[in-house]
Image (cartoon, rainbow, N blue to C red; front, side, top):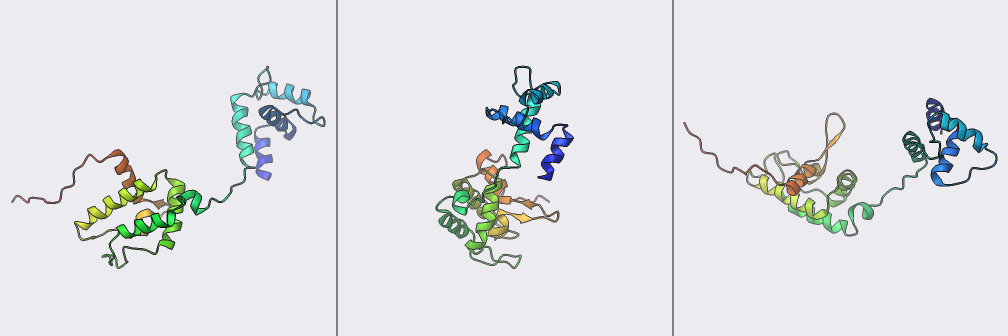
Length: 195
C-alpha cells in the first residue's frame, strides 16, 4: 500500500484526485464526501483531465498502473497452463528421448513428475502448443541421434536450464522457433576432407 502512496506523491496527485480519476474511468459518480468540482478543476489544471472531463493519455496509463496493484494473482493450475491431458503429453515427450545414459553421466529421460514444473515455467513464458513442442523435441533428438547422443541435454534441461546468471534458457523454445519459422541451413551429416 505504501508503494501506491509513494506513486501518488511522485506524480503530485492526491488520493482524492486519484479517486475522481478512477471514478471517471469507471463511469461512477464520486461519493459526496469528496468535492468532485474542486478535484476536477485541479486535475484539468495539472493535465490529468481534458476540459470535457475525459482522461488524458497520461492519466489512463497512471490509473491502469495503480489499479494493477490491486489485481489478485490467482495461481494457475497445471491443467490451465498445460492442458487437460498434460500428463499424457509429458509422457509422450519423455518417450521421445532415448532410454540411456548420456555422456554427461545423466539419463536422457527424466521422471515425468519432475518435468511438470519445468513445463509450467515453459508454458508461462512461451506461447507454443504441444504439437510444436513434440515436433521440436523429435527434431532435437533426431539431430543428436546421428552423433550417438553426444552432448545432448536431458529431457529436463532441454526445456529449461539455469545459467550462471540465474536466468533460464530454453533450447526447446529455440527448436520450437525453428519448427515454426523453418531453418535455412541444411543438415550436413558427412564432410569430405580434402588434403
